[in-house]
Length: 94
Length: 131
Image (cartoon, rainbow over all chains, first blue to last red; front, side, top):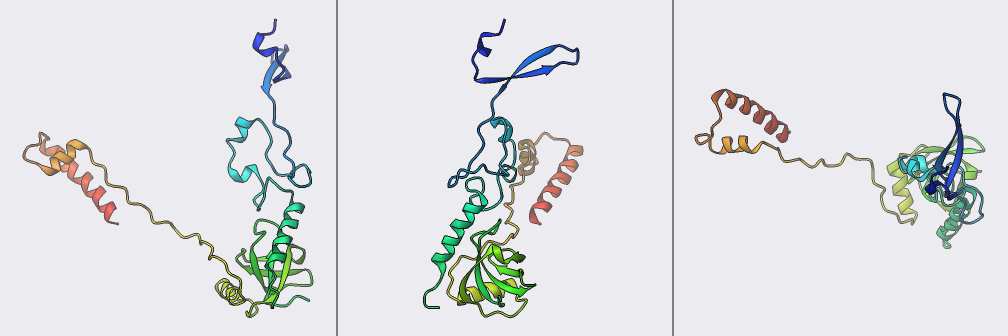
């Protein structure tokens, strides 16, 4: 019989084969969803994924790209933001 | 063609959003860039030119480029260089009993043998403190 606390589906079930050959079920925490770009909704590359407790152990540089808006915007959308910034910096008088 | 001294904003990578000026032209695609960014070879696609010129020579040093950027009318804070921080000197910790011995050697109950040892320890700690 399943333990009552494992009856809910908040933990995911992983089938594992033990060294003795038994098939057992392990209960593991679910991963959070894929991080997406704030502007275009594209899935972000270079952002660490996994169980929250494991990711917290990583260093800052391992968690997200090392650029402005890293982990928030995709590289293309970040470039658009920077181009806008550049337009603001152009001097009219020369 | 891009000329030496043209001011640009870097729009890609780790230095994105930083001011820089062209220091050298490598070929029709790449330039050497310096200023608030790191001194790097950079693709022209990764630069947004601001249409103004800094008065620098080819291969100018970082400090010269930053000076020229300021003269061209761009205000910025000098980025912090990776200088070694002033290490706070920790107060030398000595055991209470030893401190008592140092303050009032007549009243202390420590032996003479121990005394010589203690003096060595204290010498070590105080000498490292001065340095």
